[in-house]
Structures are given as structure tokens and as C-alpha cells.
Image 1 (cartoon, rainbow, N blue to C red):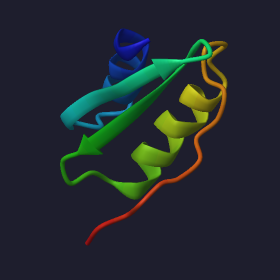
Image 2: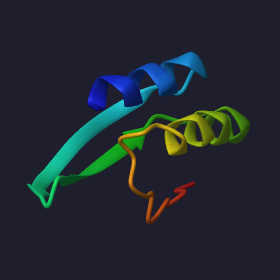
Image 3: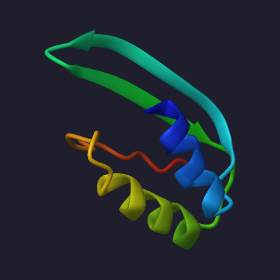
Length: 66
């Protein structure tokens, strides 16, 4: 799954600072992604693609830090 995330973000020039998987329960894992400074539009395009991946159950929160 992490490879698919990297591919989707890379396709839209979203540079990843870190990717951490936290636990695994009931066939679900929580993944936290921190990006470098990126263009908002590119991030949103990547996120839309990621939301449509079969393995994604939900994206419960997105925090934008300026």
C-alpha cells in the first residue's frame, strides 16, 4: 500500500518527508504521511487519486500546516 501512495504522490510532484504505518487491526492500518512544501492543487489531485484506491477505507483527517 505504501508503494501505491508514493506512486500517486510522485505522479503529482508531491514530495514525501515521511511515511509511517501505525498498527494493523481488523485488516486496516493507519498510515501518517508528512509532505514537504507542495502546491495545494497538486496535493489535492494526488489525494483524489489515493481516495479511489481499492485498499483505502477512509482518509479521516488532513492537517495543513503553514
